[in-house]
Amino acid sequence: MDLLYGFRTTSIVLAALATGVLDALRAAPKDEASVARETRAHAPSLARFLRALERLGIVQREAGTIGLTATGRRLAEPDGAFLARATLIGDEYIAAWQHLAHTVMTGETAFERAFGMSAWDYRARRPDLSAAFNRTMADHRASASRIVLAAYDFSHARTIVDIGGGPGGLIADLLAAHPRARGIVFDQPHVVAEAPAVFDAAGVSDRASIVGGSFFEAVPAGGDIYLLQYVLHDWSDERCTAILRKCRTAMDAHSRLLIVEDLMTARSIPNDHVVMLDLQMMVMLGGRERTREEFDALLCQAGFELLSTIPTGGAGCVLVAGPALDAPPSDVPS
Image 1 (spheres, rainbow, N blue to C red):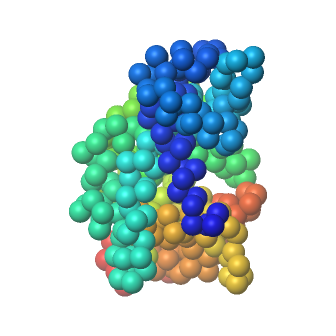
Image 2: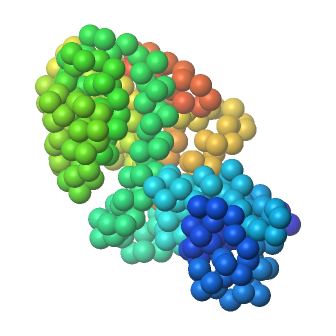
């Protein structure tokens, strides 16, 4: 029954945000009548709804008032990643996941079945969803940035290029930690439009460049370190090979490519997080999580050799690759 009725919890949380109930309680606890007036909710229905929120640990009652718990406060943060995730879940994920069976039977991407276009094209038409996605990824990259900085020695880096780097959070962190390095963030033009503010806030604008474009066409040349952080799992093997070939063409013989991803294991029961993330990629984008051996095969096809694998905790790792000496740079499949 818990497996079947999990949708109810999701719906309650999304409704708490959509109705403004959590926002109404952000400043201070209030009585039910005040919440009903402020949100213009139907008072009897609101009372029943608040009871459900209390059972989920989102609100709590004290001295005749309703207030947010610690969980509720995190959900209610106006610029928080949880609100951004809720926006994506309510507007995209639920509709796409309803077509999971179609994907299982056909291999076609559920999101495209639901919306008639890719998630990238859909978000390009919906600035609100693009902003929510960028905010979600910024939160994810903030924790990943700390892991990457600890896992790899960037002290000798001259120019670091973050491919698919969103608004530039990882480059900003890397440049702040390494004052002699320069950085380039590369992503779609409407995505990197937010990067100037990120670089200004980090105080690295004088050493950071912003380039808009598609990594299926070309990526900036001249870097000695190239980063692909949680990019390849968005794409099919064929598309990943195309991205990697563009990176290989831009690199010289001494450049290094760092791929930051979670690894699927060859065990019969892999990490729960990776299994669910793998389905998320399948439903939303047609991508997948991969094993080390599968990444190695993709790299070989694109003219790289896998040099090392650095665990970062949990299922995460940094794959370090360099141009294969016997494979000249080429965008043409061998």
